[in-house]
Image (cartoon, rainbow, N blue to C red; front, side, top):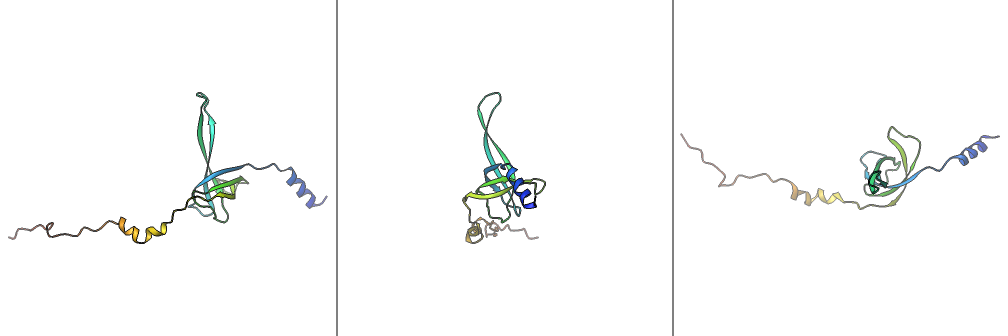
Amino acid sequence: MTTAETKTEKTEKRRLRTRQIGVVTSDKVAKTRKVVVEYLSRHAKYNKYVKRQTVLHVHDEKNESRVGDQVEVMSCRPISKSKTYRLLRIVTKGTQIDTSILEGEASKMFEKKKAEPSATDVVATPES
């Protein structure tokens, strides 16, 4: 039996890995995304469905997903202490906010203006 045959046998026996769809909430760390997966759970006492969510740390090798994107993730071997999922594909792109306009004229509107002393604000000091 060759190694190629044993590899094909191992891959045939491997179970399907869990896949989930969630929304990217953070992309601040390189190659890592926080993805929130929402689900419904039945309350034990009141028998009503309660919306719950799980935060997954996902490995994104190409840094292609952004905040607001809906992505599909798959479980994998542990990549780090908290990352056990990897990005499969981006299902839909989210709404991206263009912050470049805030760097120009629009940001000047929000800057605090220095108070310039006017003629009425000047207090005369008594001369001795």
